[in-house]
Length: 120
Image 1 (cartoon, rainbow, N blue to C red):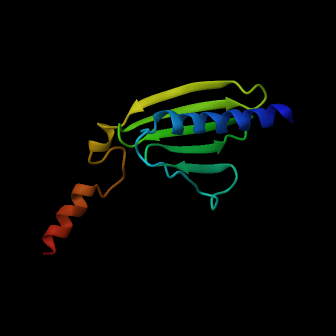
Image 2: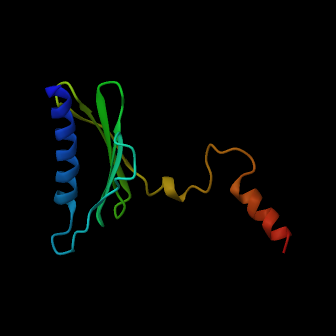
Image 3: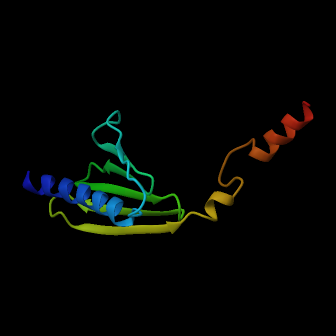
């Protein structure tokens, strides 16, 4: 039980440290915590970072941190038994977000746009 609580506390601490550490000291901070989501899926939203927490169900918690200004995303895993924190992935999303469509099914967005333009 102590390991699980420790993992949750470490996860919350990481989210808080990231939110505070990356926030612009001059900008007013207005973080919000979405309590409408299930307990295993939480979102912390601030003007500077978005942190999402998800219970992996396999003894770990996954925390995803998104920096919308820099268009970067990082994924961490917290082992609930030990409290160990592991950085799993970091990705710059700038170019991903410029792809018009990828790995999607028909009709593609450009096909829908062409149909819409034909209706005019």
